[in-house]
Image (tube, rainbow, N blue to C red; front, side):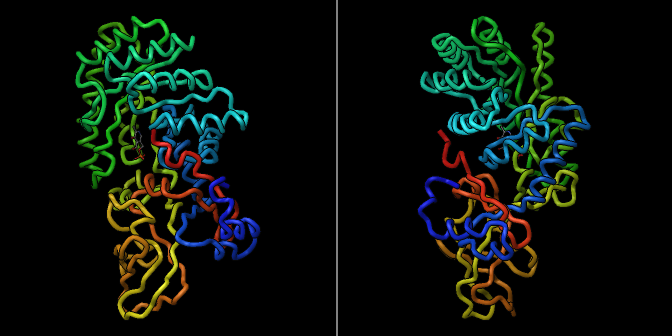
Length: 388
Ligand SMILES: Cc1ncc(COP(=O)(O)O)c(C=O)c1O
């Protein structure tokens, strides 16, 4: 249970009835609930897919921000964990340490900038096996200086822009310059490359996604080939997300996958992936909401509005009532569920499929773990808000 929520009575009440029939009805809404069985199925399925293909799995913690889920992923065979931000990694590594995980392998998938961040990375490197992506020679120098000051070593991957344009070296010449600088450093170890195609993940239609992924992977291959020709060993080739999973395995350039959303899934992925193999992860996460007003014929008002979910990917779907029922935002605190001739009752609970899981989870202190109508546990969104 999150420290910040211990004083909220509604939370205490659910905790007092954990494991009891109908305890789910006690959860104050809006709230995130996760079906524990479906969560486990997703974790196991991904572990098997990666294992069968002979690639390592380094799931991205940015989706769930939870120590509990990170532990499940490690237990299922993940080689380590991926994190977007230092702050996420710091708090999760601390907690994993406390739970007896001594040498977790941690990849920071976003380049760091500045002396202070490099110093924090060096401190973190004393607690885990740390790998940081770099995409600029100055970033290499900052990490080297911090690692020297803290008498530690840090592993690095060269981040390669595979077409997203967000971070990463653009082309082989920049990659060679960065890698040369890493080799000149005494406290840094070059381990390989990262190429994450964020722009590919939600392309609807597997053939379109495949073509775009093949194209994008060529950019990574060009860099790997150039490093190879220069005699540089590229041990780790990390990247990939839930949407390109099967395609990355088919193409075979990546030897380490870092998917995140598959643990929960969301409406945006459901729409894009449909019946594709990548879409065959269960919708384990839903947003529980209550009907608070029923005085109109064609719609009801629910207590989940703009503040209850990330809105970048549009509206949620109404689980079990698609396509008849549709949701519309109805202000900061409320939503409208339109369903002509509906029979929704005041006080009835509906489940929404969040439009985009990662930034929605970051809005909650806890996620309730459920099995049917029973709350079986509560998980802390440990790294909530740790985006620094
Ligand atoms: C660098 C990086 N790797 C992996 C992922 C995981 O992707 P997904 O959540 O689509 O599986 C993300 C998500 O944004 C990412 O930014």
